[in-house]
Length: 133
Image 1 (spheres, rainbow, N blue to C red):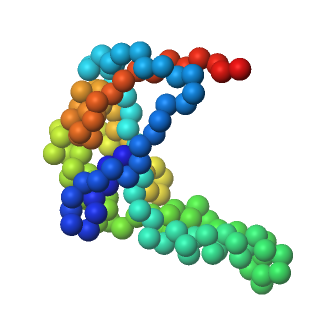
Image 2 (tube, rainbow, N blue to C red):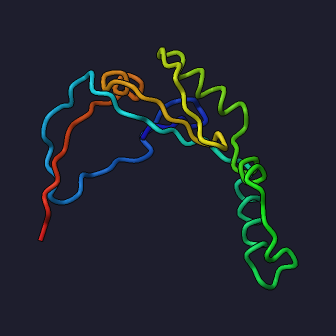
């Protein structure tokens, strides 16, 4: 996974090694459609977490109260700027069908493997998993 640092340069955030018993089995068809899900920062998540702890703690005066779905979604929502930046980036690749979660804290797009590789500057491979005893 690539992420930008403060200098706006991309850097490798995480590299995943295939599980034991999984073997690379070639490249996928470049036209094969996959879905990509992007999670956006949730700046009010700590407040959401605090509210949930309070209404779940028998020693708290708020214990047993409930939060409405809209309240949870508002506290899980990213800043509009985050949504706009990711939407602009996706649009720059010709992607217009963007599906948002209820809180708009994640979004999903369906793209061909070739487009995903271009967007993420990566190369895809198929892997086959074999049980390891």
